[in-house]
Each structure stands twice: as C-alpha cells, then as structure tokens.
Image 1 (tube, rainbow, N blue to C red):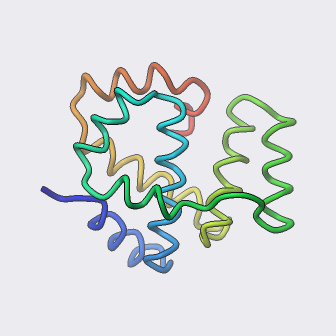
Image 2: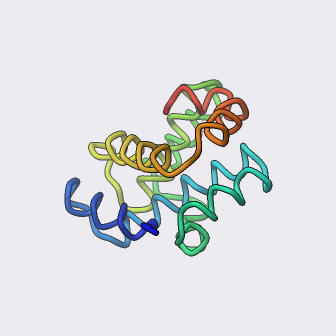
Length: 136
C-alpha cells in the first residue's frame, strides 16, 4: 500500500523542497484535518495512508517567526476561508515551505489524500470541514 512517503518524495521533487519540510507540512495539515473531522473519520484517513501519524509528530508547533505570526494573526482577524488560508500558510511557512510554494503543496497533498479515500469517507470529511473545505 502506498503511503505518505510516496507523497513526500513527489512533493519534494516537484516543488524543490526538502523531504523534511514536506513531511512537517503534511503533518501540520493532517493535524488541522484531525481537529476538524474528529477521531473516528481521521482514524480511517490514517489507516488508508500509512505514515500520517509519524508526520503529525513532526508537524510545526508554536510561534513561527514574524511572517508566520503575522499570517496567523491575519487568520484570526479574517475568519472564514480567508482566515483558514492564512492559518494554513503560516503553518506551512513554519514547516519550511515558502509562501510561493504553499498553495501548490496543499493542493498536491489534498489531491493525494482524495485519491486514497473512499467516496463515502471523502463526503463525510468534506461535510465537517466547513470553510477549510473551500481550500480543497
């Protein structure tokens, strides 16, 4: 079964980012996903994509430098999908993925995830994502 390591290699090569940044960024996005969809659905995601739990342990935490802090603050002020985009951008920047590559990285990851999940699980998850789902 193909796992997250396949995505990390692909993202690293196509976007010119380090494997560590790709794994950390993916882990951060999966942590955000888990917060939104809950343990039951997320457990199914983790079962379908080996390596997700390991990547989440390498996700960025805390501050994030001036740009990351500014983007996180903007996310809180803007709310909705704009706020979610700023929060995602700040987390990816802290993971080592520049703002010029963040959108492409997120799009690649969500495309990879969609390819691994059943239509039923995907529908359940999308229904729980709210504004974050608009970014997919």
